[in-house]
Image 1 (cartoon, rainbow, N blue to C red):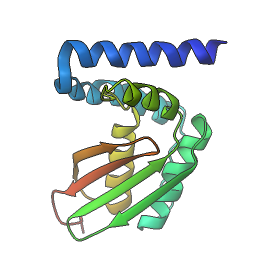
Image 2 (tube, one colour; image 1 turned 30 degrees about the vertical axis):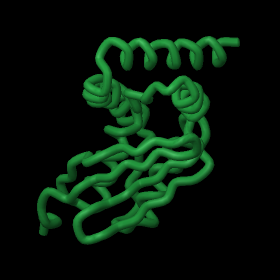
Image 3 (cartoon, rainbow, N blue to C red; image 1 turned 90 degrees about the vertical axis):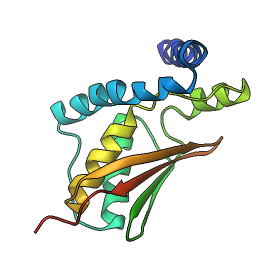
Image 4 (cartoon, rainbow, N blue to C red; image 1 turned 90 degrees about the horizontal axis):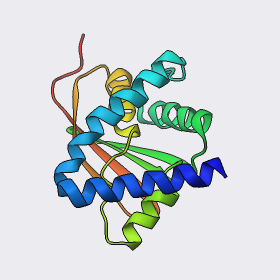
Length: 150
């Protein structure tokens, strides 16, 4: 019952943020994300195991599994960008409910964690360029800001 109430609260909160702030509520990702990242760090859930797209996908999937569940994590790397696609994360039910109501999910607490894991994996500063959401997956597109540190 608590899980259902939590899901309903998340849906209601996201809908309220969208109605009161529109797409500007996307800025709340930073605040929510910092709180989630602090929890992940405090609990020592994130372990960077390598420096490749494959290891990043594994590390993100590992954290999401420890928190709840995830179907898959895929990472694509280009010279300028890293794309992380998360399929069926712990917030997927809430995301689908919002999309069915024509509301944009405005807060993903995993965004900051995914950005930090990407920066640590590739040893360089990144910027979250965009987050694309649909019924099944979320795609986090990060842009490289500098060359890897020597």
